[in-house]
Length: 130
Image (cartoon, rainbow, N blue to C red):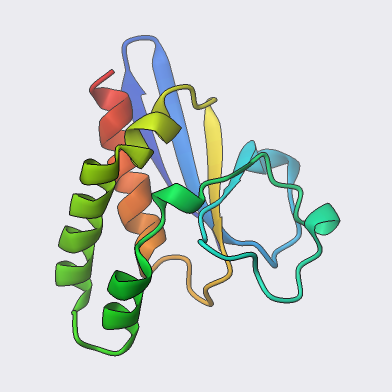
């Protein structure tokens, strides 16, 4: 089930969806962006049908490991990840020219948790500030 949020601004409406890369692509996905640092296991590039691979807009390995080991709760993880995105400028760069519908993709079992919701929120904020 896809999660989406809509952002409106001056003459612009953006819809961000969160899905697993292993789910079959849909026409309604719009611009498909893989937001994982490494290529998903078992996924052939030809089958992924992605438009972009945003490796630089993903959590650092250390941050991801701390979150998955339980050293950071979801709120702390989100705060640290936002800092990383702000410091790197990767989200601002990614948000610069997004189309109306964007689907953020991950190999994670639950795209509604972890880094995709944070990335979606940061991209939404970046679009509002344009």
